[in-house]
Length: 422
Image (cartoon, helix red, strand yellow):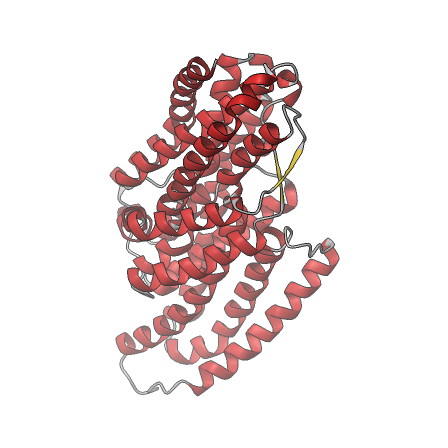
């Protein structure tokens, strides 16, 4: 059946590229809200500014740090040994998975549902492999780990966000002189943000560029950056001209302005790390197709990226964000609970902290679910009445539906593509 790959190779690569672009477009439309939703929802930046920032940093992350080599099988979710005798099935499967996940992300984005792009592509790959090849080809333990992450990661990020926001309330907002206390304590929050964001960028954003840090080096560099950010923050806040004699409401507004500046920095870091990490959801299956076709049916564990694949993924992410990203940003930033810059900062920092914890422990994680959990944690700090339960219910349903939706669509497309080319 290798003859099929040789005969139809250019067509298979062209179709995979088109569906890979659709998948990247869906990532931009849905997942970029992770980095930008809280900043927009808290009015720290406008949607237009968010799109410009995300375009720059998502593209930079995807293109500069997206990796020259990518895993052929995303997340090791299926065993490539089952495809050695019929490599064309892997090619058909990856093409169908890209189309299935891409369509599901477009549908979810149109409905304003923040779903996991990683879970979308994993569900699609599991679907075609289990039904089209063999149920034994799927690493079901990893699938169970992903299902478990629906509860674990939002709970962790929600708890961290709750703790951060409560500390901000206690140390700054619920005091007699919130402005003076903001000048005293905000530099420490800035240092903490610098530490966590630099760790996220080092661990998720720079590992593909050829910059490999040991844990000791990564943490040392993060501490150094945190100290610099804290000192810089202290100097910047002291230079701000804010009236000490203003009423409490005006002081609250001034404090929120400080957190708004901080949110822009955290959004840039999260966008870079997100672009570098999640572009693999689109280019991984595409790279697998190109690698198998070009090698005449040989399946390698790692696939060298052809020069055009990374720009295709990066451009797709940016286009999806610009054209369709507004709806999911609205859900994350405004519809779950009312966010101010300080609340948005607590959610963003909690999400980044959870990403660092997950990277260190190997916990399967969805950045979408992490951020939703963090926003819920901030809402819970103000009481259950502050949360829109109906929106949360729809989000949870969309998470549960994502794996089977991706799998079902992928199975249908797999047999269609197999029928056409066989």
